Length: 301
Image 1 (tube, rainbow, N blue to C red):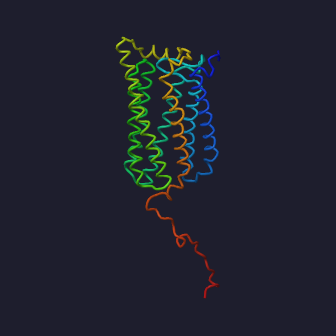
Image 2 (cartoon, rainbow, N blue to C red; image 1 turned 180 degrees about the horizontal axis):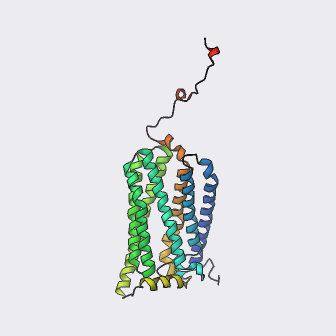
């Protein structure tokens, strides 16, 4: 395995170094969350906290694995000539990680919906995982057949899913104040940027590739031939011309998307603080919190 391409003059090497740095920081942040998870848990929500930490781990470590060994699925291009760079392995890791990420969002919106009695948040939370499972099926269709149409549909479904999440967060904004409201507003703003990227860059890119393949008469792979191809074929390249269209979405995916997963985990860890930021919620008065004193019969007047 040659590392001659690892030079600052090679933009691909610089990009890969960035992915490694971000992934290392993300793992460090997850370890901090894991260390403090039991401290923030109580007897009623320990299961939810531990589940969120595990789901976050699947996403953080899954993205770290894909950062160390980047690949472009349909093109079958990789940075390193190793069986771990197999598109079959990489896509399987991505599927598990992305479904876990979707479950995180579903849990948070469901808990917020129950806490605020919001049917909108609860109903949208129930739609998230099924939509992402369909998106993953579309992704596998593209990986197996090498048709970019599946990628275009997949990312369109992600766009619809996060549009619904933004609707739920906007509904919940009026229920909170302070730092929780600010966090939700920041999440909505981040989702807005993500949707803009999908609509203007990502999805059109895949549709353009699909149309180009149609015009060129590209022959798609069948199910069995595609499964064999996705498991055994990969081409090593360090040429920026081959990677330049993948760099933008991968960089955002392995950084900002992972940060959102970590933020969701932290948000649930601090669930016991939610009531103090609820609109029209009043803390118990001192009179309500006084402990009654039991007086012995012989002390009564």
